[in-house]
Length: 464
Image (tube, one colour):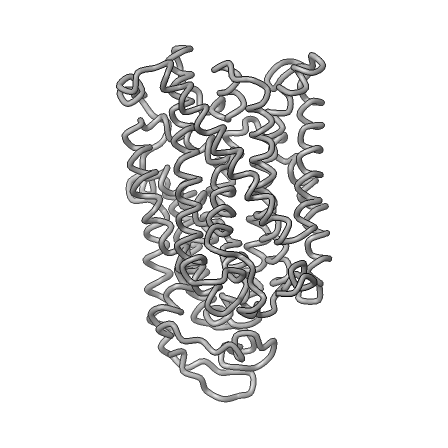
């Protein structure tokens, strides 16, 4: 790849094999750096209320299994050099794929609001050490939080605008620093408390059931919607699939584990557990770790958010094709700066976090299901690049640009999820809202996709 091409952003265009720059290590580091984030830590602190046995089961078994379908989407992006929005064209239609772009844009522009808020908490401790300002939770800390959010949002915005190559190099540095911080925190907690104490820790009446947490887990893990946006830059299939899967599982699973043992360590020290205080900054402050740890957390947040914001920009391109990649990224940079302040309007960050995961999971659970059923079961892994990247006409254009089977399945799957999650909560607390949504959307699409689809040219195309 030429030096000029290395800084090119491809938008919705195909990335040819000769233009791909991500090797196996690059892909692992990119997703490791994304998975090792403050949100993963906070998520682990929430899971700690269900006990360390559940946390270990989830980190070692359930999360890796859950991310296999996600890695299967990465393979589609790699095989065809296609972005996430383009990958959804066969199942939703060329115009219908704009829904994927909109969903990706909304979900990924929202994630930095979660991570940046937590990074701002770390910055209040840095400000407190440097100038004696109030830290998070103390009277008068609002201005410290505002400044912390501004600094974080501006930094990650600049790196995002530079593009995927700048992100690749940033993740290499972030991975090393985060390995050090995670190892340090793990050592501190395990050196202060016996592992048997941590494993035996129980909350008599957890606030949520395992099924409720699984729904949050799907929202937390399946909404890495930029998966194909990065896998299309992979040089090999194993780099795109195994590399993405391995990096995210190690990073997210490990930091979730650290968040859980840190929260339990604080609970053993203080005599009570509060998920609202399970963010890494509060944990590190209670455990007495130094200023360097807070700086590493801030760096970790930026390294995660730049991949998320890049994916949001690609989603915006999928929704509004008149934009150029750089214009889309510029819009994202400005919007994320504003949205990072949204959590300050909620009564607690925990409430915002749970609400956010409950909404975004309902969008991508049926969407990924439909894309996978279409590619692996209906079309059996066969797609035409000429039709996939055609903006008008072609086998995947659908009826007036929309694939009725995909749209109907997506709407039905979303409806099942949101009715269970927000209306029939007692049912969802036992069976989850995620698995019924997967079953309904997948089965509906498989049955409907057998019917012929009318293309723009007026011909009939069998979906198979």
